[in-house]
Image (cartoon, rainbow, N blue to C red):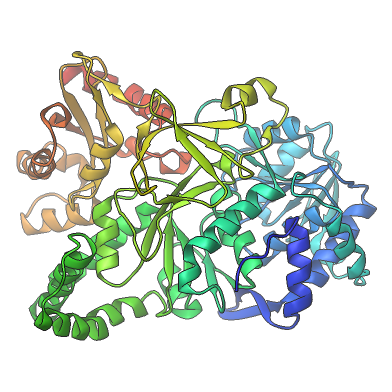
Length: 594
């Protein structure tokens, strides 16, 4: 089986539905039980909602905002919008009313679809102020006490209406071309006001085709995806929703990140779209659990890891007796770990942030194929991914088929192909700066090796230049620090300075264990002043320093407060704006360390 080169996402959906009919497509949990919707049932709901939007006056090219967590209704709404040629505008569920208003004013959306009461409460404050927003469909009952400038509908009343002629929308899907805009994905705003990335059908289909070509060796049939990353992000939207539909796969919606482990065991996914931070935490938990149990179990685990590293990382051959030993460990230790992930995993595709090679080798040594990829929203978003049969953990893999990549004279990665966005919505200046002569300027620094593997070294605007003019990559150092058991988050600083200094946020679990073991106060505020505690953190930093060059070593450090943890701002540790915010918070502390 191969991925069919459809002309549009909607043509793909309707053709797959006609072929797969009564087979299950979407799964979610209600009242403690998993419930499924077949391809036919989903298609009926898509066409019902599409017809309702048409009655509201939504036409081809109009924008429809979608505010929802991951659930079946998200996919239904997304494809209903595209079925009438309109443009879907998924937004972050963490948006404030001000964020929503910016998107409404920029996109000039005519209609909206919102899931929960809490999300509706925030969104409607913005919708009421918008001159263009006319209609809002709510998935849940919500009592509106004040008259709004927006007409409110309930999901059940518009979706449970009589099923319209599905053939009409299937036929309309054929008129949509690969060049037509499918959705506007707004950037998180870390580089200024959020910009609407115009992703056309071809960009997402190119991503899907490329992903299929890479994992073809693992089998493209009988797949199940577990969706838990936000569908408002291009990564999950493309790889966790559109690609599975093209494969004819099942999509299971996780209940929450807290219940992810339980959901994996129940859904038994074959593919998961993940972020590195999740597996950094899982590695720490798995290792600590095994160490606490000790005994034979710990020894077998360490041996499985040792032999796996010998093959995966060191590329060495096993002796005859090591092969027998490894065979036994695969059927015991590795099998048990794999069962915790459902027992059917073919690939864990990591993206969205840098993956430490150590983390990748750790999981691959235990029989879990963790494949790092690379991309950005403006490229649909995936540009490359490691092949399962020959991953190189220090790289982000090989470039997708029919995608061109070249390295500019200053080291910047440039990308060309059908995956590149149409531009930023209503922002010609930003578009002209980002796409030059058809080449997408990614802002990332990297290099291609002789076999076509791409390695990312840093962000173009995020290099630290010390007082001697040396360029230092903070991303690499921060990633190494965060892998130490003692450290949860780290930021290094040293632009135009003689050496690097660090801000460290200790790991909560390690901190609690350390305090108990050494009979110290449990409160972080008190531990911050404890000399022994600081010494323990310093030892972790020194371990990392031992693997760094002189200009990369962290010479001094300070312990950060909870203000350092700003994960919910959707900023990765190496983004310049995040570094600026943290530096402002700790300005006096940083100056005091020099």
